[in-house]
Image (tube, rainbow, N blue to C red; front, side):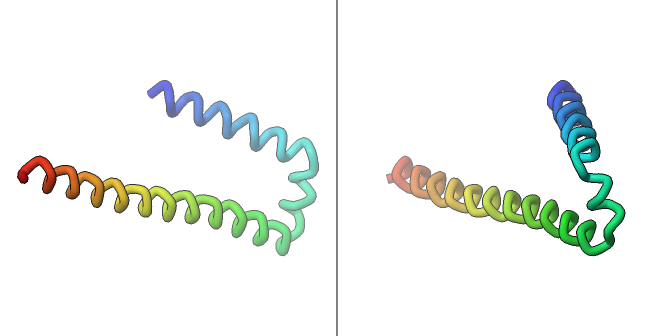
Length: 71
């Protein structure tokens, strides 16, 4: 629960700072808004892909350790 509260407060502060320092101009222009949303989505998708790759590598290492333990 505390991780959620920290993430919420951090995102709230980040959005507030973004809007204060020119984010309002981006939100008024549809093309800039589309570009901003695309950037955010690209960051999230990249993070998910990296986590997926790391989890696959970890699964392979676990399988190798289990084979070594059985032998």
